[in-house]
Length: 224
Image 1 (tube, rainbow, N blue to C red):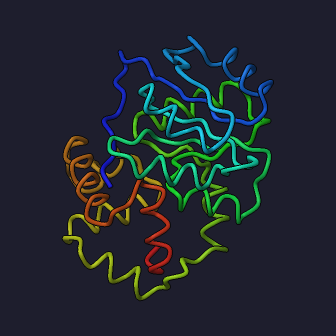
Image 2 (cartoon, helix red, strand yellow):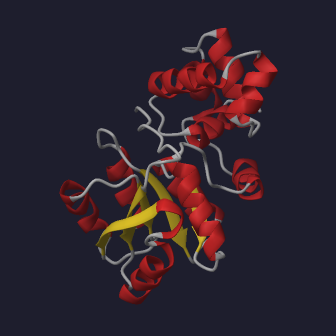
C-alpha cells in the first residue's frame, strides 16, 4: 500500500472530522479550522459515512472517533486506508485500552490520541501525520508492543521481512527504534530523500500503511 504524498510546509492540510457526537465535531472544527494551515473540509457522523464523504471531498487527514453505533472507527480506518491515495488517519477517542490501540494501528491509523489531549497536541498530530510521520507517543507504542503479538506469529513476520534488501532492513530496524528520517540518514550515511525513497519501497513491498505498522511487524518478528 503506497503512502500518499506528504503535505509540504506551504500546503494547507485538509481534514475530515468523523464523530457521532455533533458537539464534538463542532468543537473540533472550531479548534482546528484555519489554525496552522489546517482546513476542515467535511464531516461524517458515523463510520459508514466516511467513504461517501471522501468521494465528495479530498482530505489529507481523517480525524476518526473509535466507537460509533453503526460502523466503528477501526473498520472505517481499514476502509479508508484501502483507497488509492488514501488519507492518513488519526484516531481521537476516549478509550485507550491496549486492544483499542492495537486494533486501530493494525487497521492503518498513523496516530492515536485521547479526546482530552491539549489542542496543541491534536494540531501537532494532524500536521505530523500529514507529513507521513507517526503520532503515537513512544510510551503508548512500547506498551502495545510489549503486550500484543501478531496473530500470524513470529515466523510469518520474519518471512515478510526477508523480502527486503539488507539496506531496506537497516532502515526498517531504525524505524522500529523510533528514529526519524534525518536520524536514519545520519546513522546509515544516506540523504533524507534516500531514506524516504527506501521507506516508500519498504511499505509497498510489505503492503503496510505506515511506519507504525512497520514497527509492529518488526516486533512480531522479535527483531526489535
